[in-house]
Image (cartoon, rainbow, N blue to C red; front, side, top):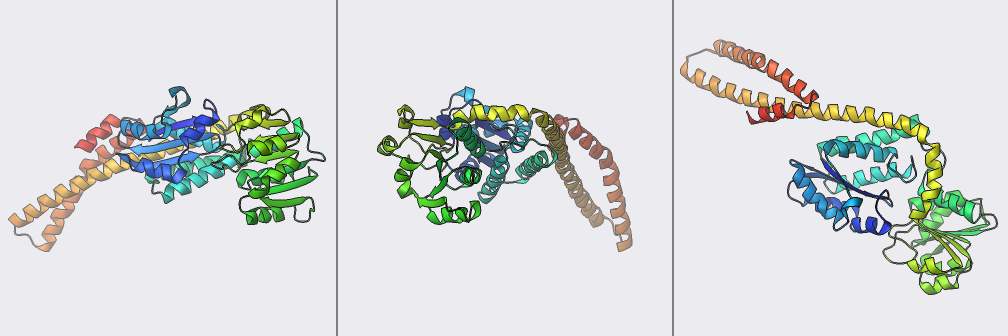
Length: 400
């Protein structure tokens, strides 16, 4: 398996957007169209774009993955070999690579990416084991440690930033986009602001969320995107996370707004760059959340040490599983070859000798015993070779 990663660690938002021009399923399908790619998995979030390809040769994987990163500068692209890819995938699902250390959203995003890859035909034996192991690690990290306590998502960080910087008391807040992050933001804001407005392209979804956020609260209302301009004018705090392909708010609407605190946690961004130059607006994006998330990161370092141990434990188990399966493939091929030769020799022998059924059965049993005894030592040697990473021995056996 070969992997590539573009993440918040080194890449800008624009570079992340460039690496995720296609959706997850489309990206998997594109990888599968590349020569030599047998399996493929793609994960796209606000803060990272990950792609993995299973090939017989690493060079084929690199060629296929080069299409994902396009013309991005080399310093923002992390290329990974087989074991590094597996370990990295486990770390991602555990939340160790997240902007907000230990955040919960990434685990759901890995699950969704797994389903997308499966629907696109990208999940085969190797990725089935690898991705499900990553999900298992993510679950263990959050049930066996406290790594996800405190601010656990970008939406939570956005609300915390608004509360600490602007304040939420007596504020009118608007959440634009009621997807996963918008829903989390709305739930964090409910009961802390004077009025909460849920804005969504599909009004029915906003209304459905309203019943779960605060069903009896008269200070909560819903609206469609057509009303967004007017809502921005009347809002004190706006958290936007639609990921629309176009700017949601035009320059005129921004100019007409009062003093407004805007947090854009969408990718691609919802709020145009023009907002940055308007004095009456305080605009924050994903990069701005770094300060908020850094506070949480420092509190979770102790828990992260335990999660690191979980990752290594499960990683070693995964490698052992892969090695055993690879050795079993070779052993199976070896036995199939021996059985084929045995059958040919028995057929020739029976055609030459005039044996009755009992005599033929005796000869067959003897042949079976010879094959089993001859292959017992090579079988053990191949399993030992797999455990010791002696792939030259295994490859030699494959050629026999």
